Image 1: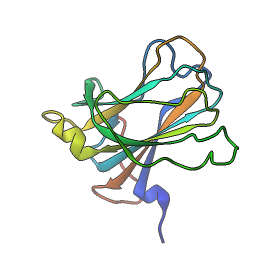
Image 2: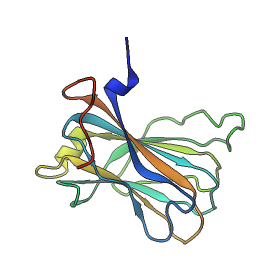
Image 3: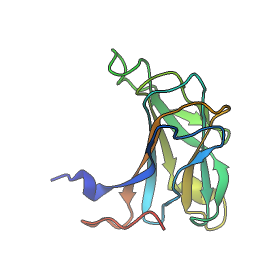
Image 4: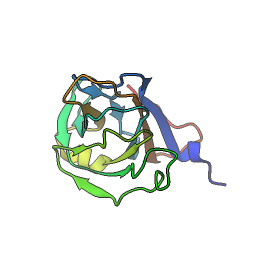
Length: 166
């Protein structure tokens, strides 16, 4: 039987708060990919502003040093405000440069899906096996949201997956 929790590690990377990110960038918890091949960040927004946050992915060697921007793939699920028609339809998977992508800032209930490959993280520098999500807004306005990290393709599958937060 397929058990989701035995194949995926869930990490609450940025807890849901009323002003999740403001004029200073919000950086998620740093995720250690040593035991996983993929990391998917889900950015879920609630009530939003018209400000358009820019999302980038950072790579590094530890939970204290993770600041090198890398390329990644993403898709959004924000054709309409939830529960509107089409609000659950994702866009095509898109390549993002190191400069990242701009979220849709005025959709309530939007989801951005960021796909990170451990091989890309490792290629960014010597001994790189950590990654984090960086969300930067260009103004101090209310932005409700959270980030969930889902690690997948464990290198050593087991019933209880190893921690990903150092």
